[in-house]
Length: 500
Image 1 (cartoon, one colour):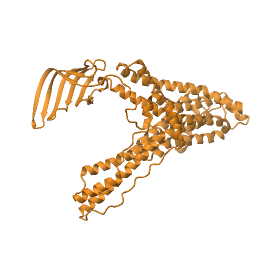
Image 2 (cartoon, rainbow, N blue to C red; image 1 turned 135 degrees about the vertical axis):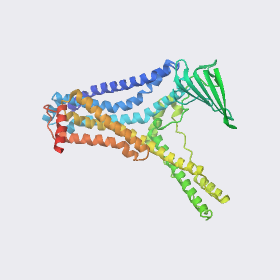
Image 3 (tube, rainbow, N blue to C red; image 1 turned 90 degrees about the vertical axis):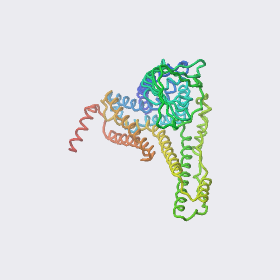
């Protein structure tokens, strides 16, 4: 059995390495083709460009690892079945569970490795990439402007829209600029064409407009519009920084830039915020109702206490800090705790509401009610979003193991499927898994279904299909007669006609 286990693992190692490299390379080429032109046009150094492209690799690897496992299992077991190796092993008393055991253990190891990678390496690489993209976006504002979209010009109260913007030269066509700087009104400038260029020192941006007219509106004169026509008009925007500076840790982290423990802490704080906002909303409603019924203000009641914030992860937190000291040390400043969520003190809020009602028996303003409702709704949505990301880390890791089971079941059931089975079954399983995962994420973010159900349902489908398939093939004696894609078509057609 030791030799058989080693042979099975060797038969899968080659296809796994090839599939992983090929899938990662294809997705990486797609990212390079999409990003390379934008990066080169900014005048960045080769080191920065290479760093940005390399930081895309962890995200791609997290996607391609489960895919490569499925492709390797399908190809390896199909090849062994077509070469009669599976038949020979079963004829000599080796059962399907015995053949699965080494691959299953390897899948468990890869699942654990994938979780550590997704939980520790990927958030830090995403954070570093986010910082780099933010710093790059500030280097040349011309290249961050989008055509046919209202663009805010940094450091000013100008908003620019153009039908055509040339990144290399800064030339524009059909330009509209909304100037919100006048204190007594506003101004809208229309021009047939224009150009952007930096002055000396690369801090001031000069916008030159050609063949246009400016409409000036005065607040004190609502029915009057002053129109000024021009051939050439220049607008100077001061203090736009063009130098590229890496300021790691200068941006706020989202769910993709946090580890599991950090997201659990964030969920706990968001739950606390939602609970306190709900308490404030109910206190406002009770106070307003008593004011409307002329009952006076109720005596002070005990303010509700927020749910306690308990520590998460335990020993895993120590491992996380150990990893943080060794992963991306240049970004260590950005790897600390996420910014705290400001939680209002419930006693102060309730006392303020009641004191205001006692001094002036007026109901709460509409803005106050809307504000507290939006605060509660935002905190609840924040909880849903971060819970989805927590479960997603685990479900993507366990997918490595489930893909092993369904891949072995398909390969043993259709041993002569060949490359067609590998490609077709892989695409079908990937589509089923990732489409249901994406749809479940959308539903869970909106609170329609729970995050656990949304994220674990795709794995449940794959796991159920894999276990059912293994149960079927374990009862059959493998043979190379049949078992190709035509057999699959006949099987599906036979079941369809029997139901008909």
